[in-house]
Image 1: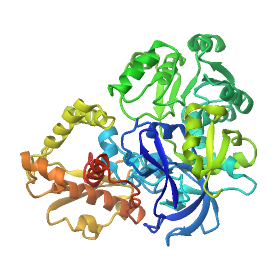
Image 2 (image 1 turned 90 degrees about the vertical axis):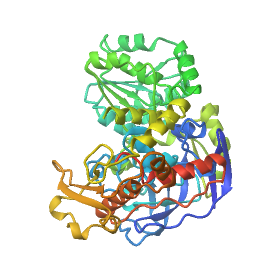
Image 3 (image 1 turned 120 degrees about the vertical axis):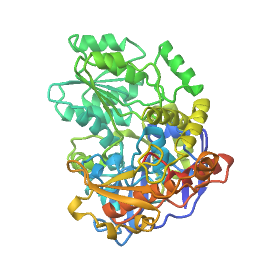
Image 4 (image 1 turned 60 degrees about the vertical axis):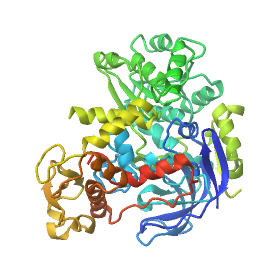
Length: 391
Length: 165
C-alpha cells in the first residue's frame, strides 16, 4: 500500500509498504479516508524528537472505514465509518479506568525508552516515533488499530469527513485544555496559539461558559477564524505587548485560565526567541518554551495554566518563581481523547462545535509532502491539510 | 533516590540529543544497576514491581500467574500484595541469582542477557495479560536499514526489559 514516510530531517516521501495485518485479537484494520497534518508532526519531521527512523509512516489524526476486525472486537464491524483517537489505549488499566487515557500502561511497546526520558511512559500513538510505541501512522491507505473497541468511535450520520476527522485529536485536545484547565462560567481564558488545537480550546472555553476568550497568535487569518468560530477576542503578538494587552483587557487581574497550544517550536518577536533557538540548535535545551513562560507570567494570581503544546524534554529559564509565588496551578497532558470523543461528535453533529473550517486544504495522499510544506510555512492560509488516500 | 532522579534527568537529556550529558548518563545508567546481592533487599537487587488494575480478591493465585511470570519462578521470588485505595494489586519479582556485575553487567545489559530485563518484560506482559487478556504487539516495521536505524533497533529491542520497574 501507499504511505507517507519520514525519510530524514525535513524529508518526506511516498513509499510502498506492506499492508498492515491483524496482530492482536483486539485489533482491527481501517481503510483511511481522511488523515490530517498536525503541528506536532512538524516536531517529528524537523528532527526535534529524535526517536524517528527512516521509513516510519507518520500521521495520527484520522478517520476511515472498518475493513477487518479481530475475533475479540465487539463494538465495530466491517463497513463502520469511524474516527480513531490518536492515542492507543487499552481501556482497562488504572489510568484508562480513571479517564486518563493517554497515560495507558499497556499500549506503548517501547515503554523503556519513554521511561528513561520522562520517568514513566505514555500510551502508544499512531505515527509518533519509537518513544511512543513505533506504531505505523495514518498517512497511509490502511492502518492497524489496536484495542479497537476503546479507540474507535462511529461517526454520526450527517457529519462529513472533513468535520469529523478533527475529533481524532485537535478537538479533544483543545477541549481537554479547557476542561482540565478548570474553565468555569464567567472566567477570562487566554489561549496561546490559534492553530487547530488552540481554536478548539477557545471554542471549548466558550461552550464551558467563559465570559471572555482571548486568542494570541501572529497569523491574521487564523485569528480571524478564532473571532468568527469561537467568538474570541484576539491579540496579534507581532503588533503589541501581549502582557500589557491582557492586563488592560482583564481589569488588571490577568486571565483566570491560560491555555498554551503552541509547543516546542514557539516563535516570538523579542530576543528570547533567538536565545531559545540558539540553545535548542546547540542541543542545550530540547524545547522553546516561549508561550509557556508568557502564560505563567500573564496568569492571574491563583489562576491555572494548562500546557497542550507538545514538549519533548528539557527547557531553560522556566519561571518557577512566578508559578510558586502567584499560587498557580499548572497542568499538562497529551489528549485523553476517549474521554471526550463521543460527546464531541455529538456536539459537532448538533452544530455546537465548528471544525470543518480547519480543513483549509484537501488533497490526495500523493501530495502529502507538498501539503506539509504548505502547512509548515503557513502558505495560502493553510491551517490543516487533509489527505484523502482514496482520491 | 538522588541518583535515580539525576539519572532520569540525564537520560531525558540524552533522548533529546544532549550528547555529553547523555553519554555520561548512559554510562551511569549502565553501571548503576550492574551489581547485585541475591536475595537481599539492596538498592542493587530490589523488588521489581508493577501494579495491576485488578482487585486483590480477583487476582490470580500464586500458582495461577500468567506464563511470563510463572516460567521465571525458579529464578526469582514473587510477591503479591494489595495496592492502596482502588489501585488494584501489586505484583513483584526479585532475582534469586546473582545479577552480573561490573563489565560483565554492562555487557549483559547491552546484549540483553541481564536477567532483570527478562523480569521487567515478564512483569509488564503479565500485567497486560491480566488487565486486557493480551500483550500488544508492535507493528511490522516499514523502516530502512540505516546506521541510525540500527541504533534504534537496538534501543527498541532492549526497551521492553529496561525502564524503571
